[in-house]
Structures are given as structure tokens and as C-alpha cells.
Amino acid sequence: MRITKVSIMRLIILGCIIPFVLSTIVYYGFSTNYTKGVFTKQGFEQLYGNGIYKYRVLGSSMLLKTYDLVEKFNLPILPHNEGDWKFYSAYFYLNTFFLCLTCITLFIVLGGLINNDFMAVDLPLMFMCCLMTITQYVVVPYDTLSYFFLSIAAFLILKNKQKVWEIIILSIVVILATLTRETASLILAFYFAFNYKEILKKTELFKINQKQRELLIITLCFLCTYFGLRFALGFENGIYKEITLINITNILSILSILFFVSIFILIVITKVKTKETFIFLLATLPYTLALLAISILWEIRLWVPVILLLLILKIPRSINSPSSGMDNLSKIEDSLN
Image (cartoon, rainbow, N blue to C red; front, side):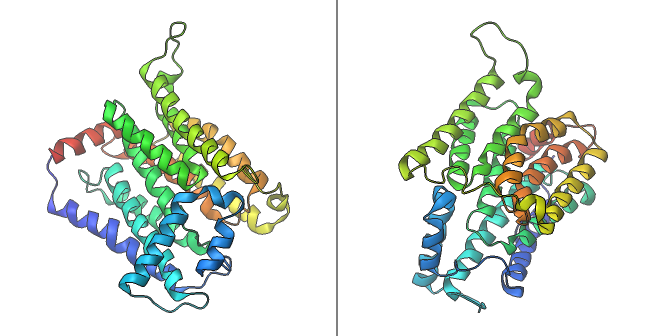
């Protein structure tokens, strides 16, 4: 099946126009009541150079580079209620760019190049786009960047029978994702959930099969990067700042938990149900339990990476049912050749 003009038009609309417009609305149509003191270079470096934030080096460095580009080329900016308008615009440019790249990747992963089904491709993508943008009332320099890496990793994993160069690329993506945010660990959970049959298969003593070997490789990439950052930058607040009970006592955090549980229930009770979604949820327990223990869950963006990967696991099986995600990705590869 060849890529059609309709598919290209949908890719441009869903991957570029809608994300750009929504991001503009969120960043310039509203003022955050949550993020404070980081819309100047000095305030940004003070916060992101300390604590757990200092390990999220890729997004922070990219924001500062984007700010330099805004100043150097005098890129268009819009007024904002507080801070340095140019620095705030750097957030907008960086996060909008990677939001668009994420939506483009999701369009391909969900089979948009070969499937014109609005309900199976366009609607889930628009839902994720809206969720990724509206949760940016907490303005940070690494969320959409991390979503992009998660989407790229999912695309590579869904191909199932990866070539050597694709495993190398996946390993690089894991490293870059870990340099961005700790949610890179969800890539390991996604890989395990999608390949659980092969990974749990018994093998001869001291021998491992291909999927077990690939999971070991990307796990080592994550762990080496994760602990390498802490050896380089110090272990103070290396995992968390403090354990807080705010998740139990704060009504906003309770609403956040209710939101995630509701989304998960919708995913698992509606057609098509797969074991992979349940296995993925179990594999993400270390992440979700950590959120309950040490995070302020009113930042609903913390659930977005899990929801994103859950949808990717579910949706490809709804396209051209009973085809699998792998079948659709194979068709996409054929259409590109």
C-alpha cells in the first residue's frame, strides 16, 4: 500500500498544525498558577542545577541553547505575565518542537500512513496531543522531549524483529531518554510487556534468547546512564528529595490518582483487550509507587508517559483488526519502499 496525499495531509494536520496551535493556546492563552521563578535564566539555573533536577541534563541544556537562539536571531516572542519574555518563549519553542515530533511519531506508530480510520488513529492521537499540552500548566524543559524518546522507542520495539542497527538506535534512545528524565525506565517496561512471551521463555543454563539479550542491553544502557549521572554530579538528592504524605492528604493529588485510574480502566475494559496492557502496568509499578511516595501528583503530567505507552500498546491492535502492531508497521515499511 502506497502513502497517499490524504495520509500526508493528515500527518501535517495531526503532527504539526494541531500541536502547534494547542501549544500556542496553552503557553500564551493561559498563565500557569503552578510554575514560579523559572522564567528567567538565573531562576532556571538556580532550580535545575540542584536536587533531582540536575540529572535531567539534556532538556535543561537544550532550553538554554534555545534561549541563545531566540536572542541571537531575535525570534518572534509574545508577551507573558512574568519573567523574561524571551526565556519563556524558549520554553514554548523547545516544547512545541518536540510536541510536534512526538505527534508525528505517534501518527506513524498508530498506522496513520496506511489507515485512514479517524476513530482508530486520528482521535486517539488528538486525545494524546490535548493531554500532553494541557498538562503543561507545570512548565518544564523536558516533558515533550521525553515523550518523543518514548514514542521513538515504542516504534522500534513494535517492529518486534529488530535488526542490529535498530537495537543500537534503541540503545541510544534509552541513553538520551535517561539523560532527559527518569521516565526512560518505562521503555524497559514497554519492551518487557510487548515481548513477555519470549522473555519469560525458559532457556538452557547460561544461555539467553534474543529478546532476553536485547532487554539486558537496554537495561544496562539505562542503569549505566542513570548511575553515571549521579557519579558525575553527586548523589545528594540523587533519587528523591523527600518522602511526603501529600498524596494521601491533598485533594488535588487524590483527583490526579482518580484521573489515572479512570483512564486505565477505560483502556483495559474497551475493545481490544490484551495481556500486554496488564503486564505493562505491573512492570511500571516501581514508577507508579515512587510517584505515590515522593511526587506531587497534582502534576498530572507525571501520568502522561504511562498513558502514552498504554495507548500505543492498545491502539495498533485495533487497526485493521485482528492485525497486530507489528503487521501495521510492516505495511508502513512496505509503503515507504
